[in-house]
Each structure stands twice: as structure tokens, then as C-alpha cells.
Image (cartoon, rainbow, N blue to C red; front, side):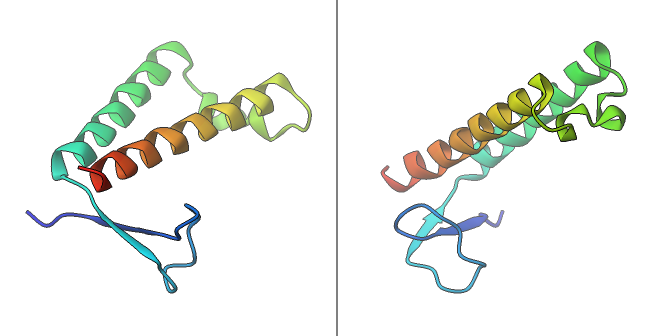
Length: 90
């Protein structure tokens, strides 16, 4: 099974997929764990907030929904980057 590769700058920012300074390889099981969590969250949303993807309230400026959307997205990015970083230090 081919491993997915992630490329980041040393500072941890993505650079359009061209100039890369650090290479990370991630085990397939870790990628699968991320997919499994996404599927579980999708099921939870379907059961607990059907139609939330249609309402798009997070696009309304200065609303609680927008703040929580951005906070949740930031947490998700940090979680994925933690998986990438933990894989690179093992």
C-alpha cells in the first residue's frame, strides 16, 4: 500500500506544493484513523444537525457560528499536523 506524503516548510506552512523543505511520510493506519474520525463526525452531524451544510451560518460575519466554525477548523488542522509531526519524530 502506497503511503501518502505531506510536504511542509520548516516553519510548518504549506507552500503551493513546489518549494518544500521538509518531508513527512505517514503510516496508512494513521491516515485511516483520520478518515474514520471524519466519517464518525459526518454521521454525528447527520443525526444531530441535519441540513447544517445547507444553512451555511458560519458564513455570516461576526456570528457565534462563524467563531465556532473557525475554532473547530483550527483544532482539526492542529490535530492533523500533530499526526504528521509525531510520525516524523518516530
